[in-house]
Image (cartoon, rainbow over all chains, first blue to last red; front, side):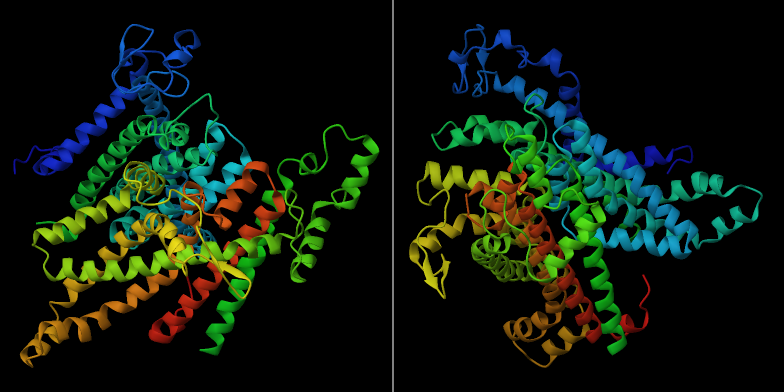
Length: 293
Length: 324
C-alpha cells in the first residue's frame, strides 16, 4: 500500500477486483449518458407530432417507416420509434429516481442524525414515526399519495420521498447513534466548536458509508416504484412517458402478439435496476467491516 | 407481562386513532368530493341540498367525529360508484384476495425454506449458485414486469394458462372460492407465482443464512457424533432452529403481500380488493379508499401487536426494555 493513495483510490482498486460490478457500473454510466444525450442520440424526436404517422404504428422491429429509416425496435401505438421513446423514457425514469433518492436522503438523514444527536423526547417521537412507517409497505403509501396529490412530476417525487425517507432516517439514526457515543465526538463537543459544526464536520461524514449504500438501493427502488405506479396508471401525465408508462401502453397489445411495445422498455428498465443493485451490493460489501480482509 | 400487553395494546389503539385522522384528512380534505357525487349540470339548490345531506357543510373536526361514530357502529359509508355499503363491497371481494395471498405465501415459504436449506447446506454446488442467482432476480425485478412476462410466455405464446380472471368457482357458505375447482386452480397458478416470487427470494435468503450459521454450531457436531443421519439432523434439529425467524417473517410478510396483491390483481384482472382499490382510486371513490386503508392499517397494527407479544413470550429482555 503506497502511502499517498487517497481513500477514493483505495476504494476504486478494491472495486476494480470485482469484474461483474465494474461491468454493472459501466452499464449504469452508459445508461445515464444515453438518458442525458437522448435528444442527440435518438433517431427520432418521439414528441414531435409532425414526425409521427399512424401508418407506422405498432410495426415490428426492423420495419422501415415513412421517415425513411429503420425502426430497430419497432414502433408503439402512436407510431413513435420505440428506441427513441425508450431513450426519452429512460431520461424521465432516471431523473425521477435520482431526484426522489436525493431529497429522501437529505430529509431522512437530517431527521435520523438530529434524533441521535439531540436525544430525549424528540428522538423517541421521530423514531416512533419512522418505525411506524417502516412497518407499512412503501408501495401502498406511494399509491395513495399519488392518487391524492394528482398527476405530475413534483407530486410523484413527493410521494416517492414520503414513501422512502424512513429507510434513510433509520440508517442515519443507527450510524449516528453509534458515532455519537465515541470519544472523538465527545472531544469535539468539549472544544468551543458549535453543535452545528460538529454535526456537519464530524458526525455526518462518518455516517456517510451506510447512507451511500442505502442511497444506491433506494434509487433503484424509486425507479422501480415509479415504473410500477406509472404501469398502474397513477404516475406521470401521458405527456411525459417514463419507461413504466411505455410498458403500460404496450400491455393491451401483448395479447395479440405485439410483444415488443412492452418488452423492450421493460428490458431497459430491468438492465438499469439490476445494474444499480449489483453496484450497490459491491459498495455494501466494501463498506462492511466484517468482510474486511 | 400483563403490563407489557396493556402498554402495547394502548399503543396500538393510539396508532389506529392517528391513522384514522390521517386517512380521513388525506382522503376527504384534499380535493372536493362533492364534484363526483353531483352531476356538473345540477342546480345550485340541488347542490347545496346534497352538501347538507352528506354533512360536508360542517367543520372538518365535526365531520371527523361523525365519521368515527359511524365507524364504531360498523358503518363505513356507501360507495359513490356502486351505491352499496362499502363494507359489503369489500367483504365480497376479500375472499379472492385472501386465497391468492395465502396460496402464494404458503407456497413461497415451503419452497423457499427447502431451496434455502439446500443452498446453505451445499453452498458451493452449482445448483445452490443457480438458486441464489434466481433469488437476486426475484429481489430486483419489479413484480409487475414478472407478471407481464408470465402472461406473455404462458398465456400468449404457449397458450397453456389463462391470462386473467378467477375461472370456475365453488360456493361454500355463500362465498365463491377458486382453489376448489380444477379450472379455478388453473387460473390461480400464474398470479400466485407472480405474487410469490419476491417472498420466495426472501425465504431462500433467510433459510440459507440460518442454515450456514447453524451447521457450524456444536449442536450439529454433537448430533453427528451421536451417529444421527444427515437427513434426521436437517429435519429434527436444523429445521427447528431456523424456524423462529422464518415464522416471524412469514407473519410480517403476510401484510405486505396483501399490499403487493394490488399490482398482481391489476395485471391478471383478479377480482379482489387490490383491483377494487385501484379502480376506486381512478374514479376517486373516497369511501372505498378510506375503508380499504383503515382495513390495511388495522391488519398491520394487529400483526405488529401479535409479533411483539410473541417476541416478549420468547425473549424476556423485550418485556423489560420497553423503550424505543
